[in-house]
Image 1 (tube, one colour):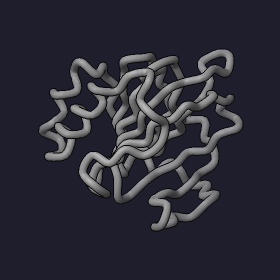
Image 2 (cartoon, one colour; image 1 turned 90 degrees about the vertical axis):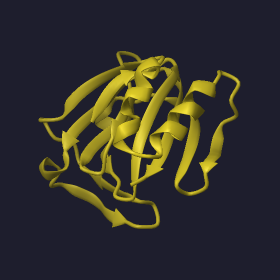
Image 3 (tube, one colour; image 1 turned 135 degrees about the vertical axis):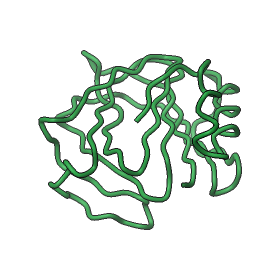
Amino acid sequence: MILDTLRQGSHYNALSPRFEKAFAFLRQVTDQTSVGRHDIAGDDIFALVQRNVTKPVAERQYESHRKYIDIQYIQRGREVMYWAPLPLLTNVTMPFDPAQDAALYGLIAEGVPVQVSAGQFTIFFPEDGHIPSCAWGESAEVLKVVVKVRV
């Protein structure tokens, strides 16, 4: 799991040959970017632009993915994301579904809260359990972009 600012995004291009295109897309995002899916390189790299209202962590679940790395960028607002190493997530609430590229897990006490503000991103790899869209204090609207990068 990585937390950094978009200005530093190019420092991570060596981690995946697809990251350069992912970060180039993120640098073009504005508050007017349309909500929904944006293809960057077909199913290898695509972005999901979302307007979400954050929720208390007690209403959320951990998730993990196998086929895609998540780059979660906050364009406007702020949220808390939780991170936990996958081996700690033993309470499976939804077994891995290949069609959704997702498994879901119950909350654990060992999860690490990560505060993410506008202009910052996180990178979650397949071995990273994570809970996005959690309230940082009060629930609030967040404009965020999740770039899915095929492993």
